Length: 70
Image (cartoon, rainbow, N blue to C red; front, side):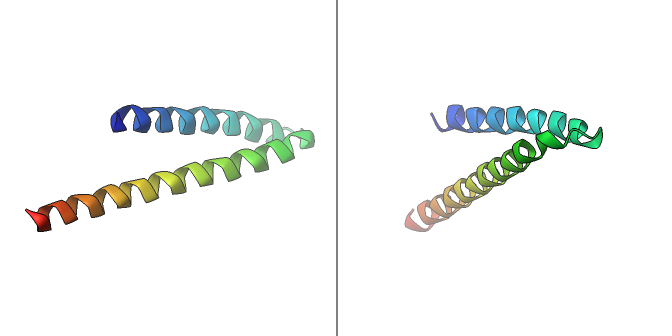
């Protein structure tokens, strides 16, 4: 179950990264209307990546606690 959640998490990051990259290309071409969307996607990506970092740390801590308990 955790691996399915991790896979879905990575797929969401990949999807948002692809969209952000397309918007960056539009912005570089002078399409300023894309700026708010680009900003929002960057914020969502940062939030997803931070969440992944927290989950990884929690798993690591749980693993260490299990070793100590054994």
